[in-house]
Amino acid sequence: MVANRVPVLRARWLTQTFVSWPYEPRTVQALLPEGLVVDEYDGAAWVTLTPLLMADVRVLGLPALPTFAETNLRTYVRGRDGVWFFSLDVTCPPFLAGRALGVPYHRADLRVSADGDTVTYTGARRSGGAAYRLTVRPGASVAPTGLDKWLTSRWHAYSRRLGVFWQTPVGHEPWALAGAEVEALEQTVTGAAGLPAPRGEPVARFSARVSHAWVGATRPVRPPDPTEHPTRRPVMSEWTPSQAEGERDPDPETDGRPGRTIHPDVPRTTPSQAEGERLPEDDE
Image 1: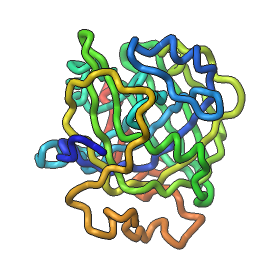
Image 2 (image 1 turned 30 degrees about the vertical axis):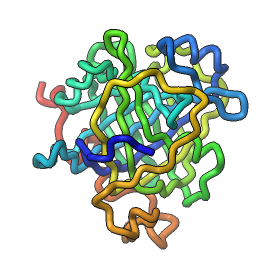
Image 3 (image 1 turned 180 degrees about the vertical axis):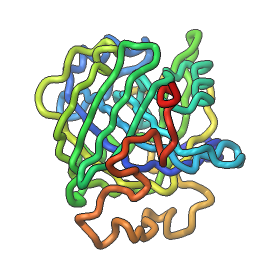
C-alpha cells in the first residue's frame, strides 16, 4: 500500500518508448548504493532507456508547465516495486531542484519528432558525456507479457543523498502498450552510468499516452526490505470510479484504431523540443 497518496505533481506522459536490455545482476548491483538490492526477472537484471514528453505538468495545483521532453535510464530494485534512476535528462530547469534529494537530473537538449509512422528521439547532455539517437516504429497494441508487467509496474522511486534514502511514490492509470520496432539506436547513456554496452536486441514497447499520472511527496526511509511483497497499484483519490477500477478514458486517437499509435501532439517532420518550442541553441 502506498503510504502517501496526496499528489505533489500531476502530469500526462506522451509518446513514451521503453527500450530494455538484460544485464548480469552483479554488474548492475555494483552500481547501486549499499542497502539496495537489484531485482531480477528470469535471472537477469534489466536496464531501461525511456524517452517521453511530459505534458500538463502541475506542481501543487499551480498552472501547468509547458510541455517538455525527458529521458531517463533506470533499473529495478527489490522491495515495494522499486526503481532506481541512473539518470534523468530534462529540458525543464526547475526539475534540477530534485538533485537536492539525490535525484540524478541533468540539463539536456532533447527532441521528439514523428515522420510518417516512426518516432525519433534525440538527446545530448549539456555537461557532455551522454547522448543518444533513437528511432522506433510503433506497432499494434499488445497484451502485456510477464516481463512487460514487471518492468512497468513500479510504484516507488528511490534516491540517496548524504547517506539517507529517499522514497517517492508514483501512480498512473493502466498502460496501453504497443509493440515497437527499433529502427536505429546509438547511445552513450548506459556508458555514462558506468554500465558496459548492452548486448543483443532490446525489448521495445511504446505508449502513446498516459492521461493520469501523479507523483507523491518524497520522504526519508530506511533501505527497502528486499523480501517485501510487491504492493498493489496505487489509486489516485481524485480519479473517477471507472479509472480507479483500472479502465482507461476512451481516446479517439488510439482506441479502436490499431494503426494509430503516435500521439497527435508530437510534431511531424520538423524536430522540436515539444509542440514547437525552440531549444536555446536554435537562437544562436
